[in-house]
Length: 479
Image (cartoon, rainbow, N blue to C red):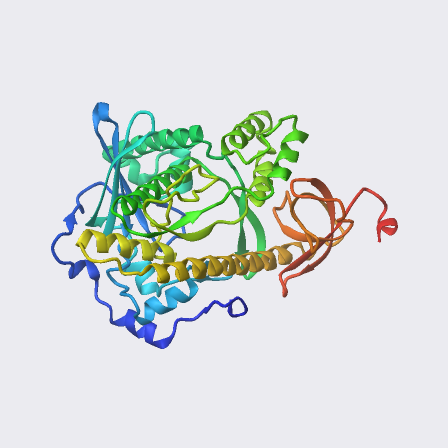
């Protein structure tokens, strides 16, 4: 982390500030609505401690559904330019590795006082928006509220229940109101997702793997596939981020936007489609790419995550930019969204905390807490630090993968090319899903190519994995 410009440890003054902090929910002033009795719930991983959001829905009859997303009010505990804020601003994100999590904020906050933990009253900024029968987002309102998480639910068990492959979680079995909530939220999420796909959102299905450690050893890379519960939360967060971006724009407030620009390597996406018998337009077209992906998913669902991974790599990374109200934003190519910010995870992402401060100042009738020039510098800094954190996470994940593969030198694997340049060619093996560099036989390979590779080196200490292209020749001939 230090090599990448990140600081793994909290400075003593930030630790002292966290230890001295009192519960913000007990000292909240007027103007904060009390919604603690509402049937809020969280859906997250089983090991999550930094709960950033809760969800709720209200049936509006023929008018559709009102969705409410409560976002943890981190600003109530972390004032600008304090020691905790300075550390968060330096790193800009929590860093999640197989070995350890390095939170953006001290655990007394992100795992307790600013986390929407079950059974505790917490402060939040609520994003409320109406969704009609066609998945269109209508009336939007943002306000401060005191909330309480009445059920801490886990993705896998909620998804199994929704999909009819498993029993209801105990909390759902015990509450008809909660069961109705989740079914309604699942249906609204489906409508939001269908509407986005109509606009050209890309139906991607990449598979991420989490290293599983047992007694200090990496024993497995466990795939984490998208399910209906994860989709539900993803759809609600995308909609909440859209609503927040439009709220700031409609009130004339400059903001940080999250953008993914049109792909620079559209020609390679054209080539991938042509290899499947599909012709894409000569210029980047999200709707055409989305239709191609839908056709490929229907034709070969088993291999679709491999194609999705290639497309993700060719889309390029997202970045933060400053949006001036009244101007055309760059938008998010992959989501087919024009107005998009990051606002729903302020415990673990600094841009979300910046957005929350902008919203709260607007609600209070105060001037924006950031000048345009400061927002510009924050946008550049957050983009750089996010890239640094991603590199750290990938390196530690590769170290864990190298530990797993260290006894498999010489074995061959099916793989997909995920990166190709004059400097290096990268692949991801399919089983187990491991990233590595091709150090022999790489000329001619490009992103999206399927290839057979042989493991020639696994160095856990450096987090490096090397492969050689394996064309099926005897090893002595390819040495």
